[in-house]
Structures are given as structure tokens and as C-alpha cells.
Length: 111
Image (cartoon, rainbow, N blue to C red; front, side, top):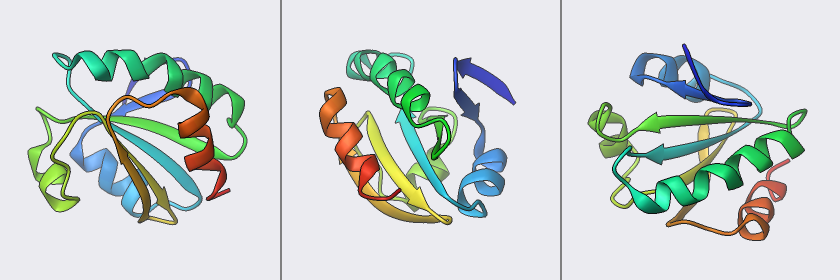
């Protein structure tokens, strides 16, 4: 497993199945692409979120270009898509670069 940034893990499809779909607790998934400008804008926001809620949530990234089957499974059509999973099930979603207060509110509903 690759460490994407501080507190955020970069997963492949197999790791996604094991850690997110079969996981417990709250996991925030960033569906992103390296070429996506808004994805780069939201990255530091997610790092702050991972740091602030490190005891309550796990934040992971999944490269949209590398894992199209996972995107298709969850209906991801725009990037970045931030999806909250609770005990392995999708619980909430937002599309596009969001400011910290919006993503914090999204997460707080589920912890």
C-alpha cells in the first residue's frame, strides 16, 4: 500500500474491497485523477480532515484512471467525488472540490 500523503492512503481496487467495502467505521474515499485540477485543490482539504478526525475516520484515495470498475460500481461520473462509507456501505457523496466546512459537515453526520 502506498502512502499518498500524511494520513491518507492510496488504494488499488483489491485494497479498496478489503479496507473500504469490508471495513468498519467511517471511511472517506477520494475518487481522483492526477490530471484533475479540482482534485488537486481538494487534496489539502482532505489532509486537514484526516488530521482533525484521525481517531474517528479513515481517509483513502482511489485513482479513477486505474480503477474504472470501482467507479462504475458506485456510479462515479465526476471528479473529484468524495464518498463517505459507513461500515462498508456508501452513506453520503459530494462531487467537485468542496471547501473544508462543507466536507467537515459531510463527515460529522456519520461519526
